Length: 247
Image (cartoon, rainbow, N blue to C red; front, side, top):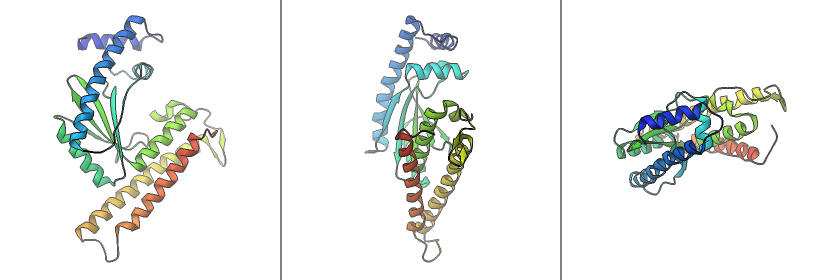
């Protein structure tokens, strides 16, 4: 399909709740292009960052349809139909180094840093790469960033998808212990800020220690233990939500 045909398909999908058989077949063809591109992206990522685990996916028909109906974006310009996620036990400096290695592998790669300026608490670094006309979003997350995002995904399943886009939880006044759902959500959003401040401090301290500029007696382990404790708390909350708990 030409780009104009793709965009006309997107407009038809945006205006209907039920896909026709013809449009469904066209959308499957468009997704198949991205599946082929994703295979190439993964091979080039392995060359750029050998041995690093990757998790890849193509957006489902339903997810694409929902996104088109939620946003005015043209179908040909959606950048995350294909995606790869990389999660590493690393500090922010190591995350920067990995992102730089990936960006060097792909001409005209575009880096979107959502750490200092998060999207409703969500933090990560995204690299938008292209193979032919197909875009692929490569997400690079530290473990705390990933755990926080997983927690929000579980809460979105329970409280409605709007919280991922700046909305409030469904039945926001429902009590959750001493808090309401809204109060708990604001607390979790605040955890993202605290987590990032801790990761920044850990990265700064590690760089100072390695450069020999740290005060006597200051070592990696001081803040590294705090980072591990933060990861443990986030992991326990994520596991609690996955257990089917009612919030």
